[in-house]
Image (cartoon, rainbow over all chains, first blue to last red; front, side, top):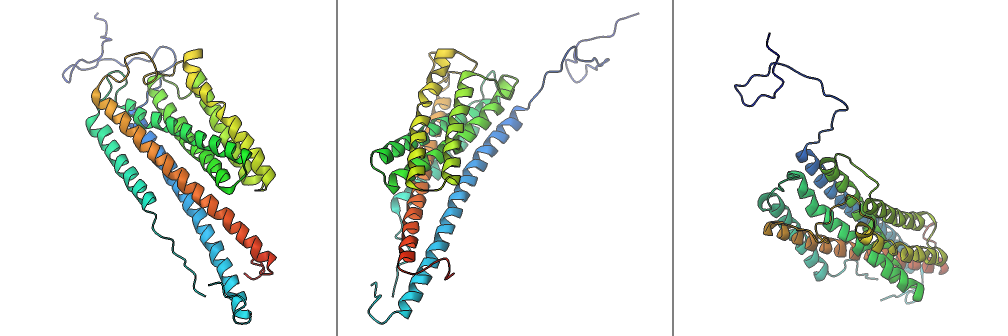
Length: 87
Length: 241
């Protein structure tokens, strides 16, 4: 009786004749491509998030500035002519 | 009353934005189309071309925070405070990139996402100090006392930077020493060009964003002052809204 072959197939014509369980804990296998794409995606996500945050703060400033201008304009229109002439 | 709303176009800022964008496009094309795949690690080594410049950008942010903090402690001003705050934000953002891209590389190279290696640990510690700085600035108010306390934290945060840099030499660990070590370094000229482009692109990005963020912060301080002046003059901006 011949022993079943334990070697890995060496080519397309070399058919596997057995499956064996891993001895001990299985080594984790990570795909380099997936890790690379994930890393680059994170870089751009952080940069875009940061720029969006600055954009949001700038929008907040614009809103406050508009409000302040509106209040000043309103006060200037109520005041007698010449009193609040900023220009 | 006529008020000028639109600001003049800032030529320097636009030039910086264009230069940064062009450099990043060149860098990405160079990394993926020209730079060779590393023999032992394979394609995952290409993370290095963004990971290391990001770590360097953390130093730029931390240096800005340190400079702004010292300037604020010597002579308090909105500009110094804004630069310190923008620098701390940069340190946290680039630190987040370093602390996520590094473990992704480590998963392939070391078989583990994280080890308590001296450089990894000191880097994490440093980023946490700047996170603490930002939490303080966000939730503890914006008075002179809070600003002074944050400036002291900004100065103390910089003390950790040399420790990160020399941790590999002093305490060993697994972290590679390709750039600063005495080993072979980058063995292919295209690898050297790729990392040089990375350093240049990230330097410009860091400077650009710190500058823009500081400008927003300075404008915010001036607006807050104008709002207070308006209230003092009897123009209550909150009740009139």
